[in-house]
Length: 407
Image 1 (cartoon, rainbow, N blue to C red):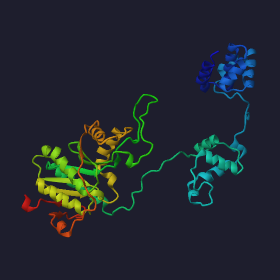
Image 2: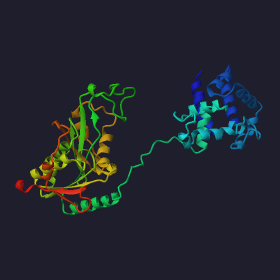
Image 3: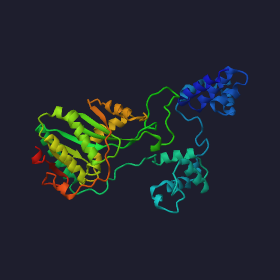
């Protein structure tokens, strides 16, 4: 006796049948099975035994002759069936809305003030208030009341600088000016630091069923092979990027060294006749507008290459607007999702293999140099920087030119 086929047929046909048709179908299956058919069909279909018996009686009396005409019409008489709980308990919906509405977050007397508002906890609290309900009914009521599961949304940017929009417009005009003259323009930033070793990496990838890649239970630095600090340089015009994978600290010296490696590896060949370089960067971090070491290291770079290095920083609180975030780093994260970053070589290969439909090409290398933190830049060293501030927000927009004795 293969009851699985009965259950499968019943579940497939169930959405298209009314109550009477389900009884008739169950009775037909029971009649085909013969002895103990009613009990078996009731068990596999979830119908009560009395329902199957009633269907058998209707089938025997040939009451199904007009079954096709009754599709879509109510079988029970008006008012038949069990009354809904919300009809018997009008206060249920009101009390549920009191528990779930956002204003209760600030009410110290609310029973759910400090707990997760899951449907099971809501159901338990409603039961404590004297209601007869279940977590399934709570979920159904919440849906009818217009509630749904919501995640936090990042929309609050903090205090906005009054010249934020003007700075973006200024950056746009300067970008266009450099591009029209055929001069290089790059966006720079440091990606999130990564632990190197057999640690879990968020995301999924295709593997044989039941054979996930095993990783360490604990994400401790001591259990791995150090850390990786990807610092990226994006040439959005050429759609090419360079990423230096550091192993020490994210300092201004590391940031400028990454720019230097981009220039020596890619930039000088593409822009062989370049006389100046424009860098767009965040206002904070290792390439921050107020970091003294950033300016002294850029001066060294300008002296080495003979380039006039112009820098435009994004206004405070707008780092997510940096092109490198959504044109390079996001695709790197997609490319290595679900893959443990077990070694620096694996990280380099995954970054270098990152591509997009628009033709993004990425080169990558390990920077094994040491970059100690806490290096102090004296006023004398800072004064030696040949910097020319722009008329508009010179603290954000400036150009560092090669020193005359080095050109």
